[in-house]
Image 1: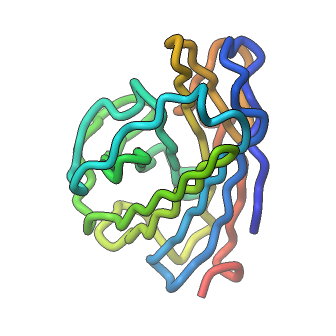
Image 2: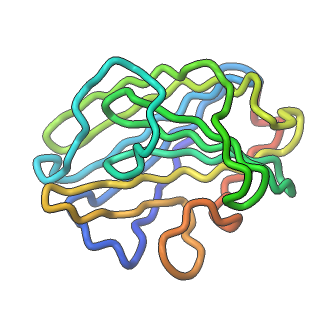
Length: 182
């Protein structure tokens, strides 16, 4: 299923004109996210390829993210995915509280780059995540795009009022019932 992200109204960066994410399930706990950024990629700072490794603070630069929670639950998980293939995964007990590394298998991250688009595909395992995978899930897909001049654009399926805030419960707008997963 393809979903379009919206640029936050306060974002100064405008080199990317469109961001979308495709969500596919390979099994009850295996998820594939394919992000596509469309625009003038010569103006974007794309992190250089590195060997895949868990790395903190990826969101300081161009980074694609996914937040997942069980509908109605306070706890949630977060994946940060860099075009460099570096990644991070965290769990939270509640809104920005109780943050800890999420003990899941390392995702596979692949990046394709053209002059007018970047495609990042991430194969994620939710095995070991503190989520009831038989329940309805809520997903928030987000993107941080850094331009050559340092300006950043913040993209999300839904932005809560105010400044960009990807952890806010209102951002978990995509509903995934168990019947939509294998």
